[in-house]
Image 1: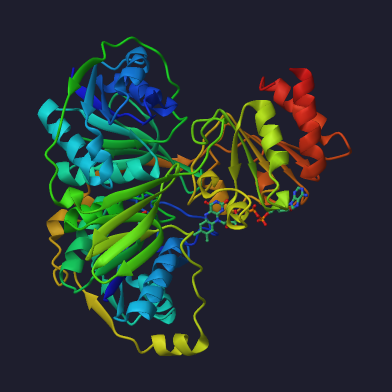
Image 2: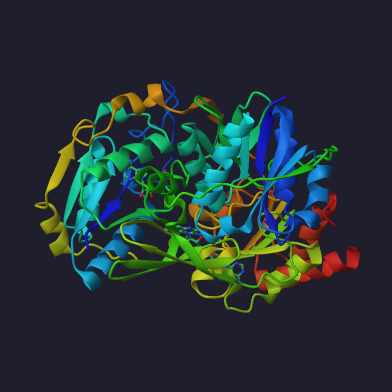
Length: 259
Length: 314
Ligand SMILES: Cc1cc2nc3c(=O)[nH]c(=O)nc-3n(C[C@H](O)[C@H](O)[C@H](O)COP(=O)(O)OP(=O)(O)OC[C@H]3O[C@@H](n4cnc5c(N)ncnc54)[C@H](O)[C@@H]3O)c2cc1C
Ligand SMILES: Nc1ncnc2c1ncn2[C@@H]1O[C@H](COP(=O)(O)O)[C@@H](O)[C@H]1O
């Protein structure tokens, strides 16, 4: 079974994240880039499926030059190879354009399953998986907390507001994962060394079959009109419990008319 | 005035509060038209009328048998047939997916996790865990917008709520992922997490699967109960109550965090709460950066005392 895992590089959530004043896009140079947390779970799930069913795991990343670091990280977890779609024309693409571009790139690859994270920590749109399924015309098995593949059939537990749905489909399919699904592995020293030699196939937009008139900031379907730092929260009151902490909170709640 | 489609969230015919918020926002833009999928419209219609729905489109329950795609086909078709000015859905994980697919079908743009929307369809967003406020706009096609619950205050205004049955011939692609079983985990009598005006959450500091210290405080306030990922992963509280980046995003009037450190992933799901109270025994816990009122202390003594105080003052 051949699996493509979509891996996005995002600014480290532990650092201060910024937007670019010039074009209101994410300032990717301002903070360290890391693999989007949920994508590590996607990689792990693909590796588990490969261990069970055989085949190959390919990483697909679209992004600026520095995303190479995230590709190496993904390869050092145990993926076999990577495709890196890297083209200035893609800068400023919104979530739907990203889904379109990834769908086109997937069209140049052979796969039984596409696995991705259900949400990225920067944009947090959570639409790429669904939009990708729409573009590819493949079954949408998103928000998966459990995945089982049996021959050509796939079954997932889809996390819902009330519990979960059991969903069935035929391969090929698009699966997005939630963090309940597994515990991502740490790369071993051996794998880190091996990862340096694994093939990374760099593609321009044209190589990946992407129509550049449909991507990038100028063609985006949405725009960020302006941005500003959120007004700082008024400094709160913090007290040490001297045996009356509960009473003091009650006083605060009374003042705010909650009780 | 052009119609603004509002996808209704309901549980067995009971309309969720967020839908009344969306109808309120829709009235700024055009004429609200509610889109109801499944059974129960008889019991839900009054609430839709009360918040200004001029029309109620009712689609068959069959659309719920498959993942996301059927509702996107319905919304795209209605938007085209009715010349809709915009489509509003609540920003739940599923509805954001519906929004994304609908926008692809319409060749339009989608904005998710919006905290406000004005008459010109300019949206407001709170990003980077609440640190930055942005305004956005859809540039192409019919804007599809997912609005965070508890962001736009619901205001009543009577609407005709004229019912019209609609249907859509589902494509094969839309039927490719079939729901074969629905597992509903008990919610109990408490308000729904994303809808609640008050949320009381417990974290690793609760210390065991005995969450009664959290539940008792929640019940004294008529609040929903939430949990951090640490508490959920430890098996102390069910998954659907997780608050945070990969759990639910809540925006209540009051959020009480008991024994929660305030990791960035947790903050991402609660930072826009209007008032924040925390009890934590570590004065350095990052949650204290957010609080309006914080107590450094043991939640196992502070929370029960608070619960008693609230009961006394009622
Ligand atoms: C991909 C990914 C997604 C994630 N998504 C989420 C998410 O959606 N939601 C989420 O919450 N987390 C999420 N996390 C996890 C997050 O990083 C933290 O690990 C988690 O929020 C910690 O939970 P906690 O605050 O309960 O536990 P801890 O960080 O262990 O904090 C426990 C706190 O309780 C205090 N305490 C202990 N005993 C007491 C006592 N008796 N009285 C008072 N205080 C006490 C301690 O001082 C401490 O501050 C995610 C992580 C990843 C990698
Ligand atoms: N530029 C990208 N390259 C590869 N994968 C991506 C990219 N953008 C988004 N994804 C995938 O889509 C998921 C959801 O992203 P989003 O919808 O932007 O929150 C991520 O977890 C990734 O798996």
